[in-house]
Every structure is written in C-alpha cells, then in structure tokens.
Image (cartoon, rainbow, N blue to C red; front, side, top):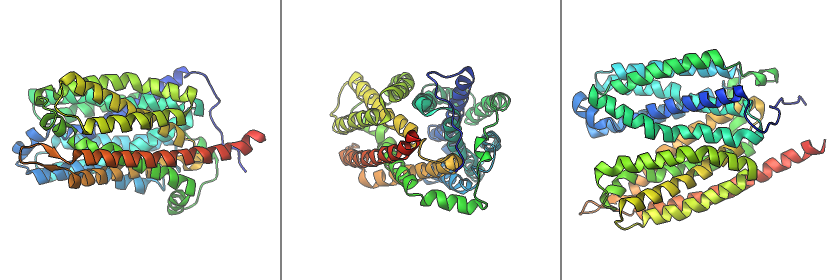
Length: 417
C-alpha cells in the first residue's frame, strides 16, 4: 500500500501557512458575501427591475441550488488536478458571474447571472477545505478551520454594511462591482503566493470520474460524515430565515436596532472562532463539539421561548447561541477532515458541500411549513422550530461520536507499526 504523505506535525503555523490560512479565509469571505448580499438588496432590486416577491425568491434560491448541483458534478473531477489550478479555474468563473450580476438590467439576466455565479462559487468552498486538509497537520486543523469560519462573521460585520452603503450611495450594482474588484486583487495575490497543491496526484486515481464519485458516496464512513453534516446544517438553517422577523415581531426590538445585534454578534464570533479552533486542537474535537451542542440546545430553547425583552438581553442570547453553533461547526470540520483518504479529499468535500447547500434549502422549506403568522403579526410555532433543531443536534452528536470511534480504530493499526 502506498504511503500517504501528510504534513509534519507542528506546534504553530509557519509563515507560509499563515498566508494560506488568510487566503482561504478571504476566499470564503468572498463567496459568502456574494451569496448573502442579494437578500438585503431585495428592497432596492424589486422596484427597479419590476420583480415580484416570488421572482426575487427564485433569484435568491437559484444560487444555492446551482451551487449544490455543481459541487456534486465536480466531485468526480476534484482529485484529478492540482488543487490550486482547480481552485483558480472556478474562482475566475465566480468573478465573471459576479461581474455579470453587476451588469444585469433585467430579471432574466440577473437570474441567469446568479445561476452562473452559483455554478462556480459552489465548488470553491469544497476546494478550500481540501487545501486546508492537505497543507495543515491534523493537530492544526481546528485552528485553521476556526480562521476560515470567521469569514461568515466578517461578511456580516464588514461586508453587508459596506455593500448596503454602496447600494444606497450609488445603486444596487455597486456591491457586486466592489466584490469583483476586491476579488480580482485577492485572486492575483493567491495565484502568485499559493504553491501547487498536488501531493494527491502522486497516488493512484480511478480512471473514470463517475467511478471516483460513486466510490466516494458509497463509502460507509463517508456516508456517516455526510449525514452528520446534513443534520447540523439542517439545524443551523432552520431558524435563520425567521430570526430577524421573530426578533422584531415577537421580541419587540425596533427594526432599526437589528444591525446592532448583527454587529455585536459578528464581532464576538470573529474573536471566538480562532479561539474555539485552538481549544479544539488542544483538548480534543469531541469535548468541544459536545459542549457546543449543549450550549446550542440550551440557547435555542431559550431564544425560541423568549418573551419581549430589552435589547441587551437579546444581544447576549444571540452571542452565546452563535458561539455554541460555532463550537459545533469548527470541531466537526476539523474532525471530518481526517475522514477521507488523500486521493478522495476533493470529491469528499465537494459532495459534502453539495449536501450542505441542499440541506440549507430543505431547512428553509421545513421552517416555512412550521412557522405561521398570527393575526397580530407575531410568528406562531417558532418554538417548534427550536425543538426540531434540538433533535437534529442530538442525532448529529451520535453520528459525530461514531465518526470519532471509526477514526480511532483506523489510527490504531498505524500507531502500532
């Protein structure tokens, strides 16, 4: 059996690894911001392009579904190329799609542009995780996953407010143009500074892409990881579509104060993300994950049962709840990074990304069928959404425990040699 090359263990990031971690976080920031920016622009886009609410909903969902489909289709080819070249190909397509969004002047043009952007952007996240796994030893992956995940918070704290300012200052095209300019500059830096990531090409590959894909989705230990990802994503996205509405209509917080909640929560998670990753590397992924599950369950049940309360209480509950969510997500990503073989890391992460996209869409549909609006405008049955989140969290904890036991069994023979 061919020995799989792995990065040597290290206590801290090297200078090059610091550059790689920053570059991967930037890539995540760009694709998350591009995905998220369309929703708050709806109030501007709909009257300008004469788009109805159902049509705008189609524009928003088009990105997610095209991203999921492309990630799945790319899985068969993800391990056949240098990961740097594979990444840059899809990143260039993502930049072109975003530019198209900035030039669109009609509903059909914007819809097609979002589909194209999703086709390319949907693959980038999986390549980012594959590169992180290839270039960072297992004892450093919690930290790098924590850094990468801060992109979500940074997009909320920095990206969305800046995008809305540009849209209000000029027009709704401006945020997309700014993403293109910043994205192009970042892409050039990554193309210049990132070394080839091709250690997997030295090992034997399946001859056919479809065989590579089928063997990835049929591997039992991979399926367990896919199921854990689906359950955690489902639980994470169930509450998202209605958080702002619940905060305003049920908790009595003024709409103008919502940005304060997002700002404080985002800043706290930016600080917490790398710390959670560092703790996971030191004390273990499973303990941190289980603590994150416990915090998430308590805070989800607290939040979904809150009566009208002052703004500081809402902010505190939000901060603790999202720290709990990150305390699940970061250790999970660090843990499952050790699940796939080197020759299947690209396809594994691509399938995992497709599952995340699909699970997010399914979660929104499920939540939409549970929640209703009362005669007084308040959201009804939001507490039931919380119960579903708790159930998905508990089931995911069982699967993650099984993943850990499976990894331990695989590593024991290697340690004995």
